[in-house]
Image (cartoon, rainbow over the protein chains, first blue to last red):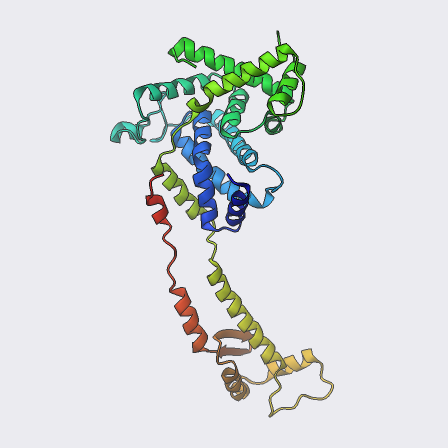
Length: 194
Length: 177
């Protein structure tokens, strides 16, 4: 996005003007949604987390340093949300709800009233998407987060190192191993050509 | 090559665009990682359904404190200014029928003003009301004296402004994304 336009949008959103956060949502919402979906494997969680990150964003825009890049700042908030969500999920006892998803991503609500989300275009694409989620799920959370932040957040390795507070070399080592593991898993288990 | 931590760090700097020189094995590692990232890339995308975007937007609108448009803020600025003007006027205005005792401090004069029985101020209030007839101000001075000054002109103006409709925010969402 054009830096001047971005600055104007951020300023508008920080002032609570509706068009400001609407622009941020339409510009970054799809990528945030993709990041959350791949990080959690759940469309329901992804939607919830996009809403959550937008609320945090608008409330914290005053902290944003205009000298820095906006996207890494935004996705570092998103990464913290994912970390919190995963932490809560591992410490909270399991409970069933209408929105709880089975391994294939369907919820009780879905089974009663049909698919809640539009089916992705083409069976192959849907299969690949599911395969990717399954392969990502086999990675450890930091490695998965780093790979996703590279793509969705378009973050440098240095910026990712700051988010995860680990050395630069460690980030690339984890990303390298994760990319290899993803390729191997997809090829072996799903025959996907990566 | 079995990459070492130093190798990874050097390659990471290179991939981040820093001007670093790589050994051939490091360069091969950099190319391998860049190719793997490109290959995975767009496969990670997930469509955000328009209905979900709509729900997220609704949630933001509901959760965020309502921020008044500028014209509404201006209305309150005008009203506050009117109150301040009326208060200043009430405190500084010296009625012709009473003289301020010589040497009486301002705080004492205000106290004396407040101590006057309620009925004794009616004429002054009426006159004051006419003076500031352009404003609608609810003003209380202490617990003993109440001032209520009504101004239709400003109220009418604000009423007209308040009728101004909000922009049609939902028209935006009806466009295909």
